Length: 164
Image (cartoon, rainbow, N blue to C red; front, top):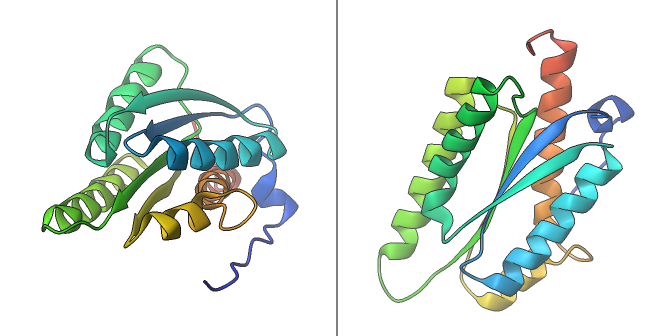
């Protein structure tokens, strides 16, 4: 696995006072726990808080984000951004391709349509070993990467005056 570049500037890491939504799919519980640990640590380093929603699988993540962000906005406390966490491991059927593609498509559509700072931490891998490598906060830290992406986009929107 290539070594990722994770050197965001201070401007991209300071989300003090921002409140993020994390939606996690716990289909693979131990992998989900590692993704969540990485995401929570990254948000803490950015001085942001979070709310957690759990769903059964990756396909449920986009609609859960839509429901939760809509409810928060109607309540007058919109989320600063969202982090999607889950894992899809290739099996013997075409189901992997459907879940991987449709969850990514729906997340991108949601983020663009609502200008929602969103980090996609849904792993799409061939094996459980690959998932563990990528999810582990001490190795791949893809949960942390997803949270850092959401924070960076939130900071960009804040600097651009795009946040209400």
